[in-house]
Length: 96
Image 1 (cartoon, rainbow, N blue to C red):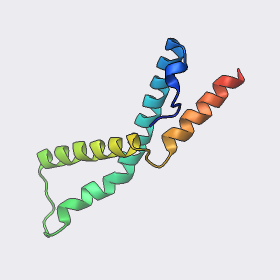
Image 2 (image 1 turned 180 degrees about the horizontal axis):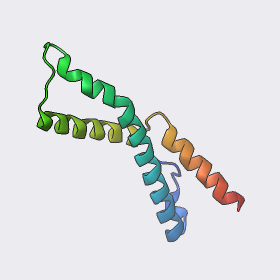
Image 3 (image 1 turned 135 degrees about the horizontal axis):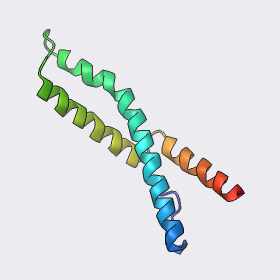
Image 4 (image 1 turned 45 degrees about the vertical axis):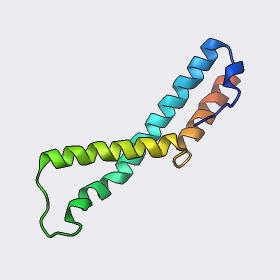
């Protein structure tokens, strides 16, 4: 997600702060998306068969997959939550 396309014009310290803010906002959105995706993760084992898998390795792999999907969605723009967080924090910072 590019919040400021001209980030190269910012002083180095400011550019680093902006990059950290964007990363933190994307992580926040990814965590929220992961929670939204969890019901689908738990429901997938019953798709196509009547037995629910009790395999913990399968659950772990599914969890990692859900996390990866959530991060990819967030980095691709997601629902716009990260963008709004960055905008709000930036506005608050500029008011000071």
